Picture 1: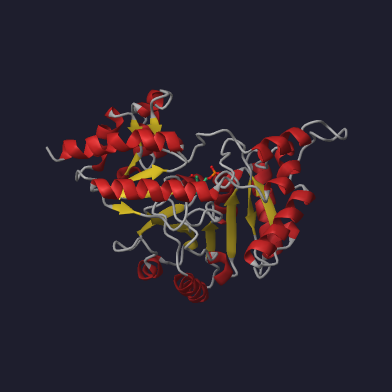
Picture 2: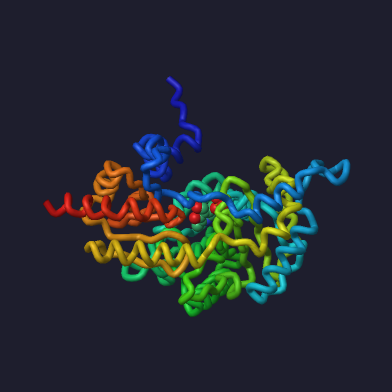
Length: 395
Ligand SMILES: Cc1ncc(COP(=O)(O)O)c(C=O)c1O
């Protein structure tokens, strides 16, 4: 009898994505999040009305101004130029407008980048704990994912482990700072050393190892912390960004991949990205979002309110006896599970209609992650419930 192997997406759903999909599709969260009494800390979703500036920009650019308003759109030059100017102002790097590839957020930016540079058998290194889709993204791009754990003491990059994992088949290393879920921003010193490691390894193996810098949370940095782009220390970098975090509009998909002006092979990389985007389902943002982009660049959720909420939540949980890990960036906060089994503790919280991610989903065992995109009312309602759940573990 012929043995049929399962399609790759099914295997991904059953393997690396299994804990996430189990929570998302099968747990009480699926229905429970709609209960008005729920406290939803699970994902980076909005729990307040969208920014008026965002809605106004979409409305302003919706009525057609020409016959080709809704023609095929790839990279609209006005959006590319605005992003390049924004990066110059915010990071001090002079990106060329034509080196900005507009994408459907960072999800697409990461997949398109991986696909553009990966040949069968190529390995791509990623760090865990980390965003739950890296392994699946690398596999979908046809690469071999190589998982490295961050340092156990502080969740920083383990540079020795990354260096040791590089082989003649390594094509890229993905780094995410500010990091989801740990909230860490990697220090400039670490990133400089990473650049040196990649330069030396590329020379040793006679082929370029790329750095894919996932900067989804670049704009969400604690007032006391400072962000440095990993791409600033390595010429062969792809900088991947999304507007879905800073605007809290992940359902309106827009972001970009930027190639630094110092990347040696920029022209072929530009073409590699363009070909990948056109042949992977015309993976460009919709026309209206592209027209509106210049007006989105200076919009942001209320970061003061966000950090005040994070600080308040952290202090309240610490007062109760939770061990809290405060973030330097992102809108996530982690705490140590009072039960050894973080999944069991997340179930206890679910009974209280409090939804957060257990560490098994992000390969961060023993922790739980809260997204403080929850609104202040949810924070207020959740505090006595966190106290009750903790009390249950001490009975
Ligand atoms: C680290 C990281 N990268 C990429 C993404 C994808 O972002 P978007 O949905 O805006 O494309 C996310 C979203 O959660 C993320 O946390």
